[in-house]
Structure formats: structure tokens, C-alpha cells
Amino acid sequence: QVTLVESGGGLVQAGGSLRLSCRGSGFTFSSYDMRWFRQAPGKDREFVAHVNWKGLITNYADSVKGRFTISKDNSKNTVALQMSSLKPEDTAVYLCQVAIHGLNYWGKGTLVTVSS
Image (tube, rainbow, N blue to C red; front, side, top):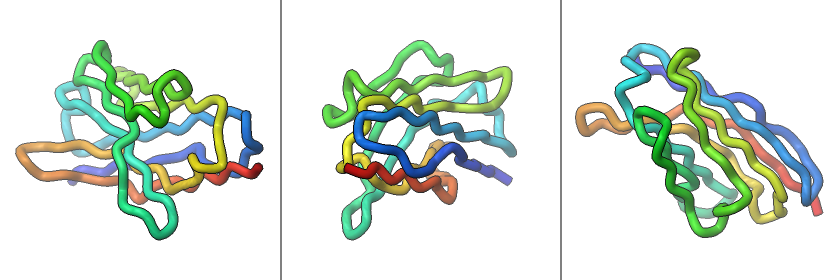
């Protein structure tokens, strides 16, 4: 079955950096676009970044543009999110997502906490 497992979250000071990773299995990873979302306490889940199936096209939410970089390694079935210049408002559970035949699959997420 489709499985997504995120890792790399933790506690970091404002201005710091963190790298998240998501490993996919149970599907042909190289054939699908991947996305990162985040959900802060008491807030709706929001889009963060997208990378196309080949890893050549990326898109970002305005709130993270210029600070976050998404990348895809099809040889390792992983998608990464490099986060820099982190702000307290980036505190959230970060989840990776893939849409396959109209169905959305999600990982369980990894918690990122940014202290001021």
C-alpha cells in the first residue's frame, strides 16, 4: 500500500535551519508529483511546496518563498524540504502528500517547533 514517512522535525531557534525528508513506498515514486503541507495548532492545513514528478518544476506558498526549497530524489524515493530563516510562525506539523488516481495520500507528519 502507499506509505509516506516523514522525518527530520525538531526544535530550532528563529533564524535557524532544518531539513525534512519524506520517503515514499508502495507506488512508482518517480511518476508522481509530491507536495509538502503543514498544519499549525488550531489552524487549517496549508500548502507549502510542490515538486513535479521529474523534480524539475517547483512551486511555493508565498509565506515560504525564498526560505524553503523542495527537492525530489527519485533514486531514493525521497522528497526533501530544506527550511532556512525559520520563524516562529513556521511552527507546525509538516506532512508530505501524493495524489494517485484522484486519491490523496498523507504521511503522519513531523513536528517543527521554532522558538523565538
